[in-house]
Image (cartoon, helix red, strand yellow):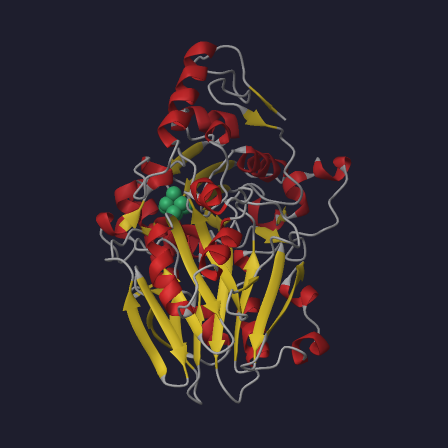
Amino acid sequence: MTSEQPAAHHSPAPGSRPSRVAFPSDALDGDELDSPKEECGVVGVFAPGEEVARLTYFGLYALQHRGQESAGIAASSGRRIVVHKDMGLVNQVFTDTGLAALEGHLSVGHCRYSTTGASSWVNAQPQYRETPAGGGLALGHNGNLVNTAELARELDVPSGNDSEIMASLLAREVDVSLEEAIVRTAPRLKGAFSVVVMDEERLHAFRDPNGVRPLQIGRLPAGGWVVASETAALDIVGAVYVRDVAPGEVVTIDGNGLHSRRFAPPNPTFCLFEWVYLARPDHRQDGGSVLYARRSMGRQLAREAPVEADIVIPVPEAGRDAAAGYAAESGLPFADGLVKNRYVGRTFIQPTQSLRQLGIKLKLSPVTEIVEGRRLVVVDDSIVRGNTARQLVAMLREAGAAEVHLRITSPPIKHPCYYGIDMATRAELVGADLEVEEIRDFIGCDSLHYISLNGLIASTPHQREKLCTACFSGEYPIPVPGEHEQLAQIKFEFSESV
Ligand code: SF4
């Protein structure tokens, strides 16, 4: 349910909803917290003589946080590709018997959160296509294309799943190798795409010229290769990180080793939000560590927004390292004042309406012994709609907190992401039109501070020009068809409502 309130004013009654943004229901959507939703994770393995499907399975297991709706693995022993995919978590989709049936020397795997296309078995990946030459290909994609509709018109297929369209485009290239098909096709794809794709004999991986989503190459001790979204997937199978797939590069791995081609010059604008929230803390990229970056964000927040308080607590899990950084910089003690129920994930048994009203309580519980009577600094990664933060503050006050000071390791999210992260529509983003003080009033905390964009960027190993900051700044590095029209429409609705 969303509803536009009738009149704008700068000082809404305390606790009431400010009126310049449409708010969804207070109830959480299913069992999800108000965080951006991850996109997808991909894994590719080329390792003759090893159990490639099992290695891929463990890689996906390490990437489960990037997508929990469906999972799949395709494998080939050189003659034909076998695909197994289904709805559910990685360990729900695969059994020992299922993995044993995926024999071969190479495989690709995927875990999915849908950003375009419905959440269904058909849209689960890897996507398989037969080619005119009688072979096949299987593809796993992390990211989101912004020219899907245009490509769908060209292919004369219903618009929807960009990965499906990408697989179809590659499969219709005739009389050329899959590598050549990628080099011909990739320049026509616009948006974010980190892709693993295989035919019966070779593994390929390619990444959009902006390198929005990560894609990394590792080497197994016995000489095989692994390509994956995050270093955690390399670590879990004992692969040693070699390098990233470069923006605009396609790598091909076969019995002769790895070779590389370019399909476009690199123009890197890596996703800044991977550093804040999306990637696992043990992920390493571009010479930097996510763990250290998040600690640095916490230290920066402590310098930008000190406050007299008794204790620093994280909102688990993404706020943990930043809270440790805030505590270290401020000299305040750190404590786990919130316990996360780690078994409430994205399930297929949705809570009933009455359970939904419990909202955040399904996922987080305050530790009374820690919060009661104390002035708390609460560190979290982001605020999307604001409802969860509001419930969290109320819950901490119920548990006896004397004061609640919220510190956020990202700037206000003002714009939607079109490159593969499901945040919310612009109308749902609490940061889109409201001032920080209005948001604080809605959430009901004693103080609220977001890290500055410059402070956030300085916590990563990158310069600003090498980062996508669009959800904070509105500066989209890859043009998004219709973005300006959408913005104009929102402004029109706003001026109508005031
Ligand atoms: S818009 Fe935000 S979430 Fe999306 S790619 Fe850019 S920085 Fe990342």
